[in-house]
Image 1: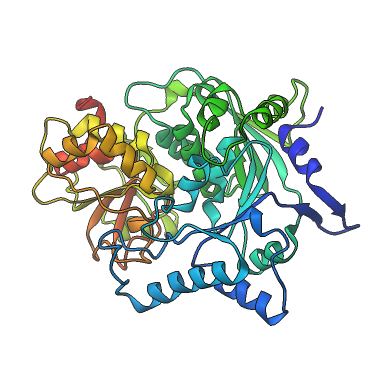
Image 2 (image 1 turned 135 degrees about the horizontal axis):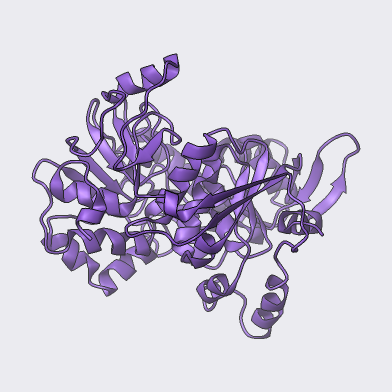
Length: 458
């Protein structure tokens, strides 16, 4: 029997080019301000209109400041890109969730929470972390700007079909271990290139028991293993999450959609190109020590040693040494947010650690909701009061310090414990040093001023 990936892919094949790629129909295109301007210019140059404009949603997120969003953007490059997206959306008749609108946020947070990303869909965006939407039971992957133009013009894309991989994680996660820790563990085990050429289906007891927020985090990080994307078969957790959301099917359309969604699973006899299995008991809270997301350890472990020149270069950049622990290292910045960990569950986790404590005086903390809807939930649940009393300020939604494309840049040499997805050299600012961790670990660092095992504070 076919895998779930085969089922969704085959349903969207328009034609197979002999000896070449597949022409694949795309259900949803998300456009943000960084990778779309040239695509729209190309459409204008050819005198084209969008083939199915109702399937396309535009939203600025990378360049948006996380403060004073009601004022003009100060950075001229950021302002130009954000303004261009708004103009392009108007010119081509596309939905646009602009800054300060209730619908704005990070596109990979807003899509699922609005019910725009649904099971069985094919979803693309000019952004590698489009794999996030795979948590909804969809085939979702990032594309380049020329491919964005292709989808604008035809609602189709030319793609080589990737191979299939199933990753099973069984057992029960220990105290303080989150979906972020699971993803960082997988990367350390199979490396940042171990899933190259594959589309990953996550299964097993651990995955089944994850919340939707946890599943979105896990799928978000698929790309950091080199995968084309990652996804999870939809189940009751998925259906309960979608039910009643703004763009979700309603009434008899809901019942019809639900009937189809329940068929979206790999058969017991499905054959994958590669299968891997992991045990939850091997996973503790994780943290990275190097300059790629796969260079990580359990927080109680020591940094390994290696004679590899790139490994040594990475440690020099980070200011760490082989054989030492990270626990106790002084922290300068803490960032909670990004399309990886900017959802309501992440703020609940952060607040659960800091409640009754105070932010360390010498730590700069940026707490950035992934959307205005997350911001609303934070305030409805009173998490803002807990965070404010502990000395934290909640900023306005956006990609923020995940990447150095807006005002939230970590200064050179400073160490940031970040809940984002990448720790490359300069990712959070020129010369900035990044360690990736879960919201629990970030919160522990924020109140102690040093890298701390969050289990000590639970």
